[in-house]
Length: 285
Image 1 (cartoon, one colour):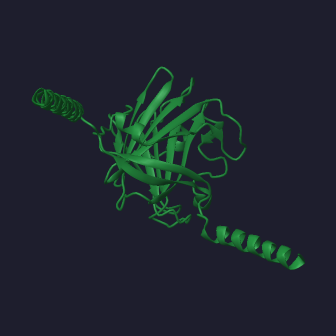
Image 2 (tube, rainbow, N blue to C red):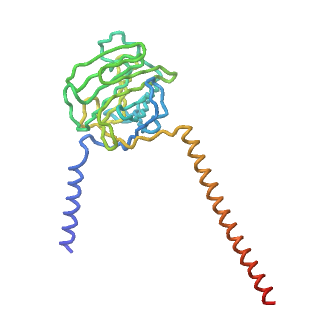
Image 3 (cartoon, rainbow, N blue to C red):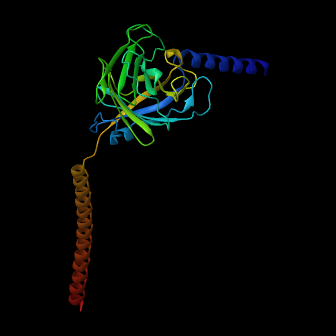
């Protein structure tokens, strides 16, 4: 009995060690993000293709926990060559416009998207993770790796740097934003480390950062959560739907006709047998 118990405990410990060895270095698995084959347009509007992906709540106060004064919701999907992210921010008090393009945009109300496209949980200068910000006034700032050089660019209708595009638009509730982030090697099974956050500055001096992950802030790639890319959903066009319906109807009609034909054959056979029986009876008489 003791030997059996000892063996069982050893097996349990071995299993736990194995789980620890193969766990992702970036923390919690947030599930699967499906891809889309629908047309995606960078315009800070929620395209239908986002419904093929996944939705994340980004309203957790980072480090402290709990819900922030504002709320942030993110939708994520991917195409064969880019990750797409759409965000809706509900913030009743937006900070004033930052006229200094060289002033970091995290010092105004801004969305900050952090991606570790290798999901290694490491900070590599001038490479990973990718830091991508945009505010409600379309000021974009970006940086690759914690010690990388910051890049700033403003456009009247969105901003572009060398490794992503973004667009934002104000709304009655706050503002919405959308990102297109080209990434190579996107395919089912690929893991992406991420941290989405919103820098909420109500008066320009006190910042409350809310995000998808309470534990991770900015460059803590080792604490990022991750999602796994799923299948790319094939869009069904109206014509394809009509054709499929017509095909189904045709098959049903053919099956019905075949069934009717079978009944007709049986009826004919019964009639023939009955007629033959009559003839035989007449001959006997």
